[in-house]
Image (cartoon, rainbow, N blue to C red; front, side):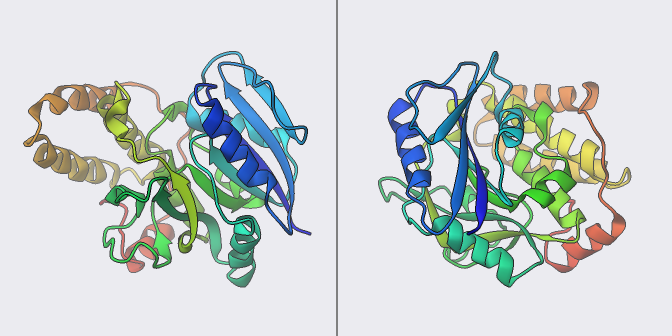
Length: 287
């Protein structure tokens, strides 16, 4: 029976949603799950008997919180699940594992994300330029991080999630580093997770972190000559978007400056061979 280490991340502010997320994992069939609930800034209590608790003394942010949970689990595969997301199918994990075993080039998998109330989901939930049919599977170059499956060996090879990011764009770095392992990031449109339809701008510092982490993605992962090209491309995109809401530009450019000024942590530039593979697959890492 396949074994899966499951890391469920929570700040303890959504107890009902957390219970639903954990129940959806405990209901999985034909796999053996080892579950840890990571409390970012608190220690989870009142958990089901099969769920371990890991309390972090402070909120380390989303990617670092996920990283902290991994050593507390065992299993050939890893499943990262946020507390406001859940899977309906009781065979979700075994179906995801079947994708990896059928295609050894897949290094990480994101399911299609549907809204809980079946409202129209944000376009960004389909992480590719040509959105098309959201049920269509494809290779991708970024990930919506709320429900992610990957082999533990790949997770360890890429160095885990980008801990310094706190939140925003860690799914881009993870996808790029998977590609640099000779694997592919995969959008499994035929598998599904559920998430509430809430705007990313609910976070007060969204625009600041969006810009800082965009620069950090480039500084940490791209060959030196490509990093400014990538940042320039996204600066142009933000200027176009900011024309509709100029108030967003001030925090965005403050984050942009912090991205160049502050230490982004470990630098592991992808190889030129990876740049070429990504380009042939339809997304050169300057867009």
